[in-house]
Amino acid sequence: MKRFIVGLALVAGCSSTSQDSGQPARSSDPVPTLGIGRAATLQEIAALDIDVRPDGAGLPEGSGTAVTGRAVYAAHCVSCHGPEGQGTPTGEQLVGGSASEVFVASGTERSGRGGRKTVGSYWPYATTLYDYTNRAMPFDKPGSLTPSEVYAVTAFVLWKNGIIGENDSMNRATLPAVRMPARDKFVPDDRLRFRQVR
Image (cartoon, rainbow, N blue to C red; front, top):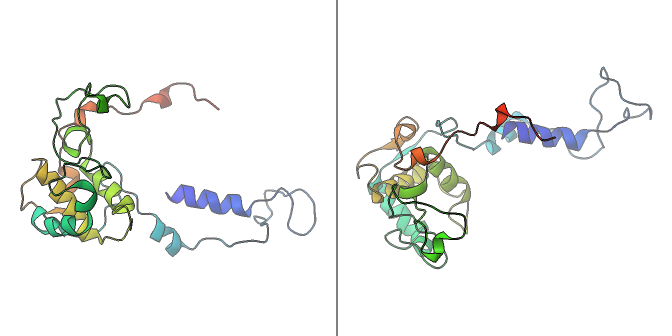
């Protein structure tokens, strides 16, 4: 995320000529600007750098259990995902399915030929469940939950899928240690060993 934001700042400030002379810019010249915007501060970058990686890098302080997550889920998630995580016409199913289910080409699982893609049957990392919930949920107010509320609702969904215990505390140390049932369905992206498309 930091590289993306810094990249945007550089693109917004770039020009092919020196600021005042009209001459081509030299590498020793200060970075020219277009006269709009300003460089982002480190604090502004840190506030936007909220992504969490599969290994747990980026997880904030805070904690929650399925017990505390039940109230968070009821207040913010139930209207779209249903009281038991079964899904509704407006929200995906979160609970159910099995990691042994077979998934077929995109779009065909709804025809009954493939498995149900739920947190328990298809999600590879518990940490990225936190990341997605933190950045995109609730649908009508994304990013409005505190870190402890996100840990709690993540714990609730993991518990409903039988992955953790109801009183297991999820935090920056314990969440990366959760082994998701469908983890082995995913393989590392090794395309970097092949010639890159430019």
